[in-house]
Picture (cartoon, rainbow, N blue to C red):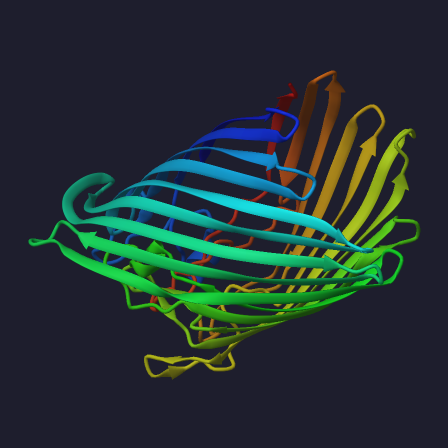
Amino acid sequence: MRRDVASWETQLKASEKQSIHAYILYSDLYYQTPGGLTLAEYLANPRQARPPSGTSPGAVQAQAAIFQKNFTAGFSSTYHFDEHWQNTTAVYGAYTDFINPGIRVYEVRQEPHFGGRTVFQYKTQLGENTLQVNAGAEAQKGFFETRDYANKLGVQDTLQTDDRIGNWQYILFAQADLRLDAGWTITAGASFNRNTVTLTRTSMIPPVTNDIHFANKLAPRISILKKIVPGVSLYVSAARGFSTPTAQELQKTNGVLGPPLLPEDGTDYEVGARGNLIQGKLFFDVNAFFFRLSNTIVQRIDSNGVGYSINAGRTDQHGIESTVSYYLVDDPSGFFRNVRLWVSHTWNDFHYRDFSTGGHDYSGNRLPSVPPQTVVAGGDILLKPGFYTNITFTYADRIALNDGNTAYAGSYNLLSARVGYKKTFGKWKLDIYAAGDNLFNTRYSLGNDINAAAPPARYYNAAPTVNYFGGVSVNYAL
């Protein structure tokens, strides 16, 4: 794999009332795609690429890889009209050039798109209380071109499909926050969205066009927070949301229009507590969520390696997320400027509530790809001369690889560490570091091919073993 990235950004104060932020990002990514392995192949040699099978070439013969170049540029402006009103407006433009020689097809995509967002904010005092209202709009427009060719051992061959994809989406939103002097904060908001996708197959004579419109829907949200003691708050929230299918989800990975899809429709309830204790040294945040999703979009892969999406009935997604951190040392003038220990834990109980397809009933089964337990813990040390270290440990539980829960990827433990040196020289900031990932040299599968067709059930994609890297970062503030 090779990734080259160049970026530039600047922030200017145009006047006492206005600030402007601009950025440019260019990335050039190349990596080989070894393809999924069966369990037997993964256990025998996880470093191997997908071998040939029948009339299908292997990943090496097909020279399977991703070539992706992306250019993004944009700017934002924040303008303060007076002590009550301000506006933040941002616009961007982007272009992606994507080439993917795959097992079956040689895909070429160009994806120019642009968008913008504007938010007006009003803030005022109502006696001892504070009211803040945010309202605005967001819009995105894409003009995509996708061509699929036969892949003749890594060489672009006969044209199979030629598609033009137009994607148009806009969102209107508003939110009000009322902070009361008794320690209460009440937040209420809603969004209104619309999405239209036009798919035109120009390789057919005459060309065939599919216009897909998703109905406007209102997504409301309300939350209440109460400060019970200094530094500690309890909160509850309820929200309903909608997620329309992306252009990629509407199509199979071979460019053919996939099964009709409905937008995902979810209702979420949350209750939690957050705050700090022991003079700010101990921070905690515990959140329990109860999420019910209808028309859940899930991925499937057929026997030819073609991926597509379907709606999977209703799912129940419950869980608890918690994080705790403690500063052993927090002394800006001492030799040990800061020493912090932290741990995060996530418990997930994600199941199909009712889902039947192809004569199979998966109701009650676990959702694939979601680990029931995840633990991430670590320690951070910063010394007065500028030297620092970060150590992170990760545990992830085993995950189901298909809707039937008949295959699993095992749990794994990972250790990573970084040591470096940070220093500020006037307007210059320097950061030099060296790091290592998977220091336990654990064998595990990541980026699994969920719901791969069986046989041969090629679910597994081996993750990198122990690896090392380093870097230098230089920043200059005008």
